[in-house]
Image (cartoon, rainbow, N blue to C red; front, side, top):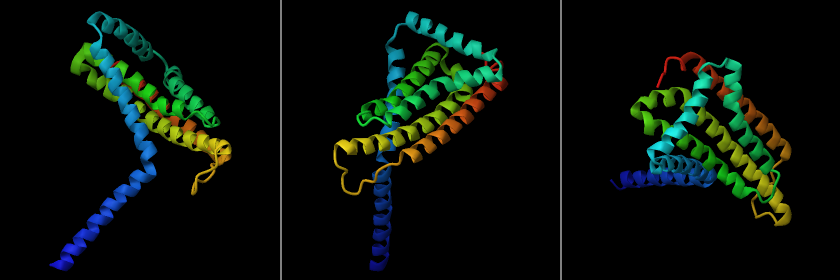
Length: 214
């Protein structure tokens, strides 16, 4: 019995130790994910506080954008999809070369979440549950995919920014400098993945936009 209890205790310790190690190694990513969710909640809360007339005006803008995409060709939809995310990725790329850009980098996921929260919240506020299929099929897949790319971009930008900060302030023990060459290579991969996500969204609009009428 004692051996059984010791075995269970050992497994539990190993389990909790694994969780602790995971959070310790990935706490920045988790914090950025929470910031993104905070942006989504903030956008939804803003819509909830607005009066119906303002929501209707916002919906006119959203519907105008979505309606134009319904009639666009694949290439035009691809460009529309990638533009906003590409701006964020370029911003993060250059922030990585600035030693004091960490606050800006941390805010990027919030603004991405805020944009999604405002647009999705507006549609739900006006159309109710009918908006779920539209958002779930056409908007959400690339929003999640591009968010993961932006999340990785934030992490890499923070690493490089801290490397440049170490020139001003001595590196802490155990901290490894981050190679700008490796940084640029990863951002080329992020750009490629962003293109894949935008192509997926454009393809979904081509297939389903005319069928999912609000």
